[in-house]
Length: 65
Image: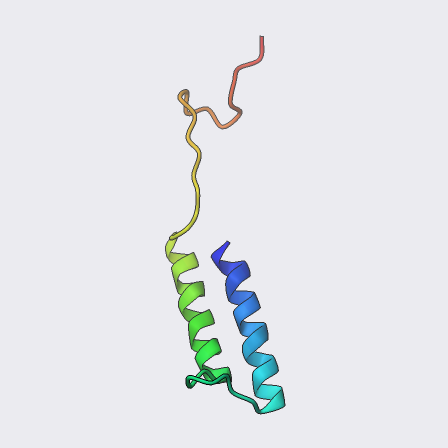
């Protein structure tokens, strides 16, 4: 999920850099690039990933009968 948000942030930063515009408050293309890199680092660290564990620990879930 964080990787998708980072891709969107990178896209916004790229568009702002192409147009040469900045959002009031000091947000420029580089700000969005750094925010995207921070989100990618969090994604690589495993933050925001959901792991669902089953009681049996079997990767197939329930055993076939």
